[in-house]
Structure formats: C-alpha cells, structure tokens
Length: 427
Image 1: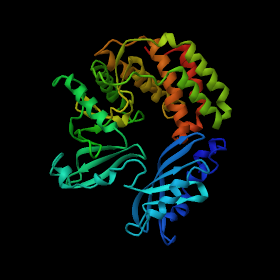
Image 2: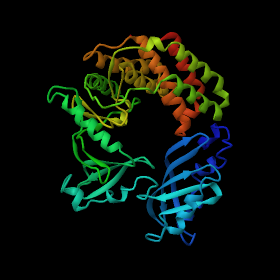
Image 3: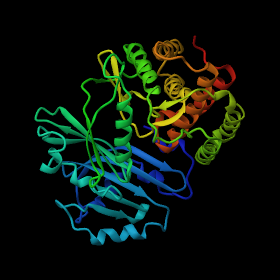
Image 4: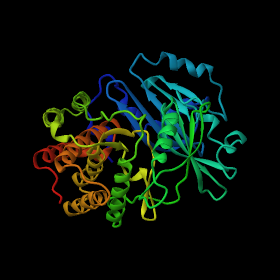
C-alpha cells in the first residue's frame, strides 16, 4: 500500500515528516513512552494529521501498548526547536508504567499520552464522570468515549449512560472556543422557532469556565448518510432545508467570513506548490482567476454554518440537527452551498460518484434549500464551490494528509477551473 506522503515532495524544513506518518515505523518510535523501552506496541493507526508545511506536524495515533488501548498525540517541530520539550520528560513520572510525555530526539517529535495534552490543561479533569460535572450534566453519565480530538486545540467526549448511549457531549478547548461556542448556541437557539422547523440545534446543558468545557445535548437521531449511499438524495434535501433556516438566524457576536480572501488563497497556493510542484502553476492560475472574478461571488449576507459535511448533520425525522458551531460566521449564503457542492465534486473527481449521481444529489440539496429560501445566483454558488474545492479539498488534502485528495489533486484543480468557466451544470 502506498504511503500518503509518497504523493508529497520532501519538506526540507521538516526532514522527518514521513517517518512520523509511517504507521509501520511509529510503534518502534513510541517505545520512548516506556521507561524500559521494551513495550509491545501494536495496532498503530493514525486518525488525524495537521501538517503546517515548513513549520510543524501534529498527529493522533490509536495504538495498543502491552494490549491496552491508548491515544497518543504527536507534535513534530523544526530541528533545534524542541529543547524545551525534550526537558519535559525529566520532570514527568510514569503513570501506570508509561511516561505521559516523551521526546523522540531522532525525529524531533514529542508525544503526549491522552488525556495529557500540550495546551488543553483541563482535559484530564473531564474525561471521567465525577460529582462536580455530573451535577451539571446528568446523573446517568457513567462512562466516557473520545469522539474527536485535535491536539493542542480541542477534544469532544461522548458522555455515556449504563447502556452506552450518549446523554451529552462535552467539548473541551485549549483556549476560549468552548465559551464562544456556548454563546453562539444560545444566540442561535434564541432565534429558532420551537415547532415546524426543519432545523434542530442541540441545547447547551452547561458551561464551566474553570474547565473550559461546554456540555451539549445529545441529539436523538442518525448521522446524515454518506453521498455514496442510496438514501443520500432524501437526506441532502432535508439538509438543504435546514441550512436555509440556519441562514436566517442571527448571531451578532460571530466574525465575518474571510476564508476565501485573496491573501488566504494566495498563501494556500504557495503551500500547495511547495510540496506538490506538479500542480503549483495551475494552483497559482486558479487563485488568480478566483481573485479576478470575486465580484461575481457577491450575494446576500447570512448566518453561515461554515463547516457543512455529513458528520455535522443529524437526521431527526424530517428535520436535520446541525452541530459544531466553531466556524459560524456572517458571510455570503453561497459559501455554505458551494462548500457542500465542493464535497460532492470531490467524490466525483475521485471516481466515487458518477456524473449523473452528482447532479442528482446537488439538485436535491439546492432544491431543499430553495423550498425554504431564495437561492443565490448560480454564478455566486459556482465561484464559492470552486474556491471551496481548492481550499477545503485540494489544500486540505495536503495539510490533513488525505490520500484520496492527494491522488487526485490535478483533477480537483481542473474541476475548480471548470466551475469558473462553465458554472454549475445543474438546473
């Protein structure tokens, strides 16, 4: 099997990048967590990567150490920048036979054993139920399961009852993101009609500034099916209606949407070109075209969700619950619509969706939206879809080390160019 980094040029500033992201080699490296250096480490699986080209690599590994499951966060620094973290091991006593933080000098990488984290100081206080937090959330909370983890940024925990069903979700943040999310949920829900709406938002159950943690209601429903599923059209139609309602909500304290500003697009093209020189010229040309045609992307300003994808949507009967308000912003309605369409185009470029299926799903989503709210101009939607296909799909294929996107970078850029030239091919 081809390693994902095989599709990337060497990063001279991070010469050990590929070693850290080699699942076959990492178990040997992780023996630095064991004081004796003899632990049996198996089942290594990398579940998340945040690659800042030329600066750092962060990754999450799920492994078994002496047959016990563990989650390990890694941070690779540029050579010579890890002295402060190398010393941390000397100040750390083993817990249950393992160091909670350890440094692998050979690859300039420091590892943290979950729930220890370089920046999320309160994580260990929330990973298990205790009287203080149970009184805030639910007495039926018995165990906890890690649902999502972005090292040095945030973690989401499912709070489970005795039947292993979620009674709440806890989001723990390194900074003040949980506090901002709490305020955003309150503002959005205050504008949401109680009945007859195709949109559901989880209720914030509690917030602790001391723990920097927000507990949210666990919505009773199912995940939106993936676009490759036969039932996807019906789900996307529901999602379109929910997004239309979301766009008419108001959250006065959220920032202005600036993801597709010319400066950000140009910086992204430079990053892409550094590790994928084969598409550098085309990326620069695409960004130039996006800048030249940005005037055509203008449309009505709304409350954007900012991160539309199946994992953030819960189907509840005929309604859809939208979760994760971290990227909520004030911006053009076409930004959310274009982002969703870019996700479908990504699958089409990779060969996972046929042309006919892509059109069917895109029309279902936009049709669901149009039943609740007037669609922005197709030219604006196409522009935002092209920008999202480049920044959210092509560039993130590099920064998140996504094999499917890395394999099809030329096709993704070509599709973005086609959207600017021909527009949407749907009714």
